[in-house]
Amino acid sequence: MTSKIKVDNINKVSDDSNIIKKCGTTTTIGSGASNPIVVDGSAVTLGRCGGTVALASGATQTGFGRTGTVDWQTSSIKTGTFTAATGEGYFCNTSGGAFTVNLPAGSAGAIVSLADYTRTWQTNSLTVSPNGSEKIGGVNADATLNTEGQSLTFVYVDATEGWINVQDSTSAITGRLVTPFIVATGGTITTSGDDKIHTFTGPGTFCVTNEGIGSNQVISHLVVAGGGGGGHDDGGGGGAGGFRENESPVTPYTASPIKGGTAVTISSVGGIPVTVGGGGTAGQPGGADATSGANSIFSTITSTGGGFGDRGQPAGGPGGSGGGGDAQDAGGTGNTPPVSPAQGKDGGAGTPGGNAAGGGGGALNAGSAGTGSGAPGNGGNGGGGATTSITASPVAYAGGGGGGGYASGGSGGPGGGGQGMSYSSGTAGAGTDNKGGGGGGGSTAPGSRAGANGGSGVVIIRYKFQ
Image 1 (tube, rainbow, N blue to C red):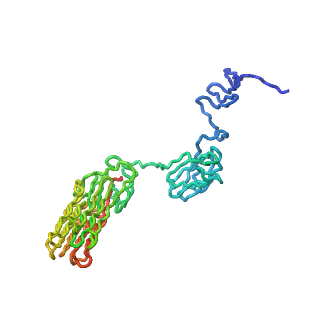
Image 2 (tube, rainbow, N blue to C red):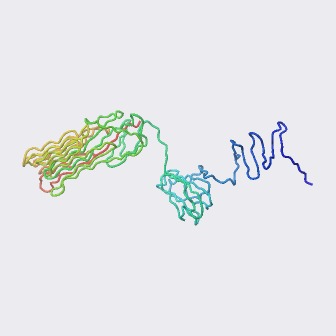
Image 3 (tube, rainbow, N blue to C red):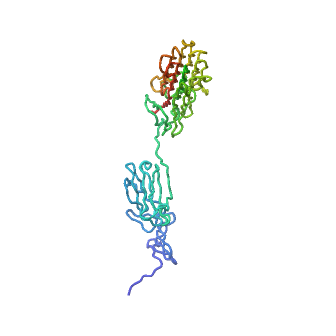
């Protein structure tokens, strides 16, 4: 016969507290703060209110299910094709090449997460492949992940839709360098002492990854527009591109005499577009007249293209500096639209009734008027440009083009202005690229009587980096 012990309660000898207590359908093991297990007819409760249930080291759990989260596999970064397991998240490194993640067989509530470990999915994509005939978002086909910094979570719902993406992030968050100085890329970068210098000779972006602190956020800049084209057949010289410079107190150098105006402050990270204006086209005999140069733009600073050299038009073109007038017209107006300090000067006038056109205006000096009349006509010289050491060496920019003349063409202004053409000189000189020089005016020489193209502009940025 089997022996039985029948009791409702088991108590400790030392203090008579409950070890096991039976009350109705509920059995409680333990008492007070150490009350760990409660068993009744429909539920098993582990722990007490405010307590913690913990698995011992090395223990595993089964049957509890998942709560919409995954266990990230941080010790196993994936670099090649693999098969995922439900309940796990994977960091996928495609920097060495694209590969595939095979999803596990689907069951309701299965969950898999993926993240772009090196922010390279936009270059080497990650392919996600469903198991057999199962679906991703209702379609039995692979999914391609090609967004930089993407992370996402798939949950298997049912046979109709299969795996559904329930969470998707396309933000690649990276740390920022902590420094009191600007950190940036873009253009051609050189250094001078504690300063970095970015030179843009064509369109680009000044990409700021750290904006610096306080006075270090104020940069120096030079923005020069494209020079105007020279006019044909005793045409005026092209005006120089607008010249605008500002010197920051923290980046001292020998600036031009016309520095000043609006300062540029880098107050946030991001890309700042840079536009470098092209030179205007030359006037062609029997064809199109000369055109003005294009604007150069950086941040809030716009320098206006140089005015075209005149031929048969009312006057030389207005612009950063004005274009020279032809053998009977006035020169164009510089510093148009007006800024302070002025970005350029007026073009010179032609000689009434003569074969002598005016020179284009420069950043510092107006273009000279043509002199003489008829065969002795001499084209006016282009106005002088401005010299600055923003690049650590003195360089002149924005010289006006010389006017065309019968006896002699005007000389180009210092700073890239092109030489004006004479009857016997053959060709007019082009404005110098990346200096914003105006093109020289053509003459009435036999053969080609065309003017010359203006030179393209430049944008230079200088800031303290250490």
